[in-house]
Length: 442
Image 1 (tube, rainbow, N blue to C red):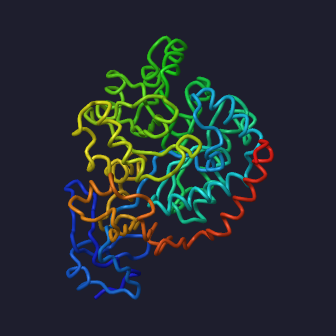
Image 2: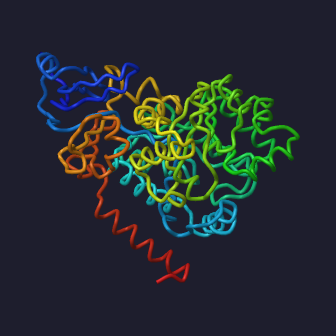
Image 3: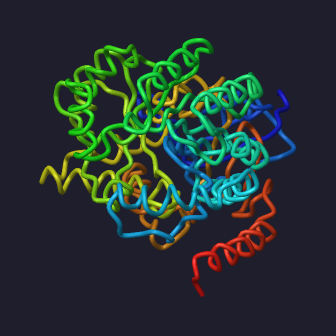
């Protein structure tokens, strides 16, 4: 028998492969960063032994969730500027307050809070866009989370970059600093087409091509955005992106609410990826992205929460529930966006959207051991007829009991092992008091 670092023993294992494999009483052998074997409990435990056994009897074991679009430090804006239209929200609240408050220490502390929230609700990988992303990376690394992140690039000054060239130089520093890191990966992220000049978009593309990294941006989030861009370019925004070479398998577009048939076809033809953020788009009344149409066309679609200023949480179970129900009511069709499709958006398809499908998103030998264990022994999860339906319509983040990322246990029995939760909460509360004073709040 071969000794491995740990065995996850006796759980209902949802593999999330193309065959929809479910092992009703299975075990997973984990050694180092990787999954070594997955199968029936008797078969796996006849071949592998371990001094550490995670008893998963009565639990559901599945890949860690992948949050494909976040602004992690914006946990500090949670509840601060709600019930506003997007441009009012951005221009009169978010941008001014970022200029006033955001610095390296803020980005680290509030990102660490985001990591705590995500781990405790079953997310193991997140894709982030914000300011001072090196500090976001350090927070993720400290928490043991996998991430794909990039500095938000603007034509105007940000708290971290006075000019677009400074932002690009900072981004290149991120790429070189975190090259070959087992957890931290970098994406080039011009903020939006309407906050970036043609030159900045071109330079961003050149940088992505130089290092072979993904390129992502907020895209067609509002109707007014689409109309303004079409007027600016004299053609559809997607045609513009095609003409400047943006459309490729490395391109990730966040939101895509106002995509028409021609846009969808171009995305499909070029292998572009899209990230759906239903709760944020609902809260800001931006609209509903044509996700079923995009999927039918063959576009890879991941799922994201967006930031805590526009959601206001990072719970991917809630996001799955919303994604499934929203499209049913829009289409007046209860068969649209079934539970299995939505779970795939949060796991294997999310991994594909981020270019990580070869390492995470499913529980197969050779994949990184990013695994969550869900406690089914609760009234709201009893009885169990269909695992996918349970995950989407019944499970919530607080049902996640144990989390592994890159083979390391980062939460066990609901206790965070990589973050001093009580100490972090006290620091956050102290910082929040200062923010409230600045805003004249009690």
